[in-house]
Length: 398
Image (cartoon, rainbow, N blue to C red; front, side, top):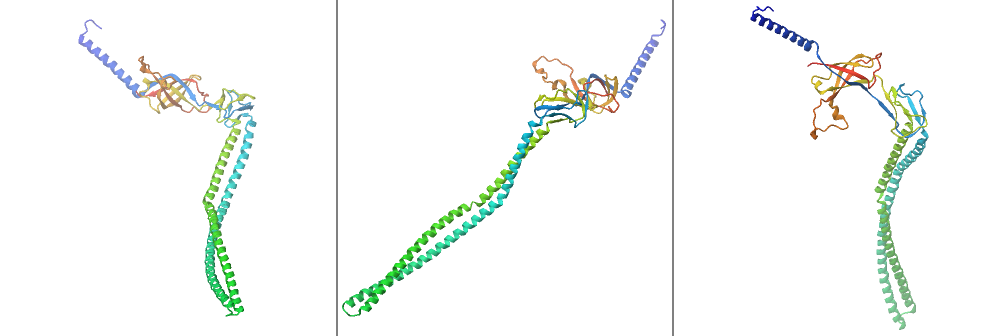
């Protein structure tokens, strides 16, 4: 710049230069915001996937291991991995099958006994009611007989008194020879006859009294039988309760049999999913306990990405945003998208979460897990395995 240049001109040039720089900055920012969206990156990420632990459902001794099931080999779902000795469980199944048969037979017998008990109980009730009615009829008849016998006694007694009075009067007359001996004998015979009739009538009256007492006793006995027979509804209810109890025992035995059959079926260790075998730890002859880990199966390419972003990077991150996933193992990029954002920081999920109430608070930037879906990991692509290291960048709009 010339030493003689006008200061005003110099100031104008400086202003023009500053304006030009400002325009360039604005253009760059406009291109950056409108054309090239912002990105947030992290290398604290890895591929994740399902790792299926295969445990024994029961304890036992391994008698056979599939020779094709080895670490790093692929197995299909449904493949038999190993056998446990079934002889530890088959006797229990046989015994419980017998229990089920016995309980089912008892249930059928109880069901058949209900109508039999019902008919017998109602028959006893009807018979007892009829017996009570018959005994009451016999009592009425005995009472009637007693009344008739008492009337006969009264009539015979009157006849006897009259005949005896005639005999006594005729005895006085025969002693004075006012009547013949034959007339007296006739009156004596009448007295004797009426006396015998009175004795017979009194005997009939006593017999009728005994019949009344006997009829009353029979009524008491029949009423006792009736009270016993009147428990027919309870007997029927008890028979039906026996059916319910037998049904319950049958269900219990059937449930026990089902459980035993399941245990017997668990002697075949079967792969629940297709995948790659890892951490195999079983051999023939090995004694295992229920729940013991035998191996793991990892389905290939059934994977996703877990990336831990700093909390300051999540301001503009949203579900559905596009992402680039760089796999270190293959030095290759895959397309992805944000599937979900974690509900808490990693420290909150740790076994010993930090307690800032101690007074030793230090502000540390936390990380939050973000799950990303890999778009078309696809057939023919490299095998993506859980645990692989990756780098993730998510395109966000600031």
